[in-house]
Length: 151
Image 1 (cartoon, rainbow, N blue to C red):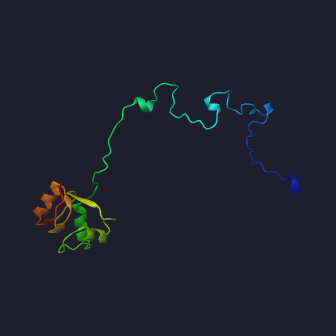
Image 2 (cartoon, rainbow, N blue to C red; image 1 turned 90 degrees about the vertical axis):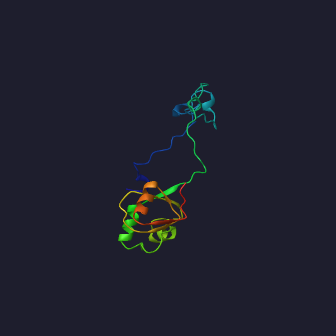
Image 3 (cartoon, rainbow, N blue to C red; image 1 turned 90 degrees about the horizontal axis):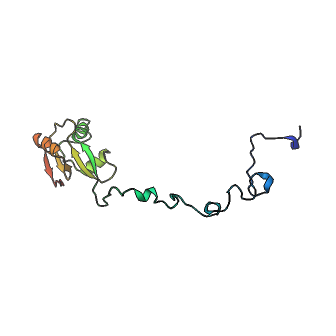
């Protein structure tokens, strides 16, 4: 065996377009005859032959409010779990900075405290939004609030 006899079976030759009538893709180069689609640089996506396109026939829907406030929900059960694990002290007031230190939040976000889970601690909350149920549960356990942001 010599170098000029080596052959690779997995090599597929590129289709050469516009190389004469015998190639199968000569003359019109596989584009048919004339017309807009035979020309280069034409994109007619969504064109339905003069009929009103579907994206214009269907009604507009929805609305996205640019000024909405997004809240990160935190359940009272999670706060109680952190107190039980001694990651949060029930003697000190709870604010956003302590939640950041514990790792419950990644950045300084708007937070809303929800009532899911059991909560039995007497805790002072500073600067949070509360659901009505969460607020009653905290008050029932002797907790207090400062700078409530409820709206």
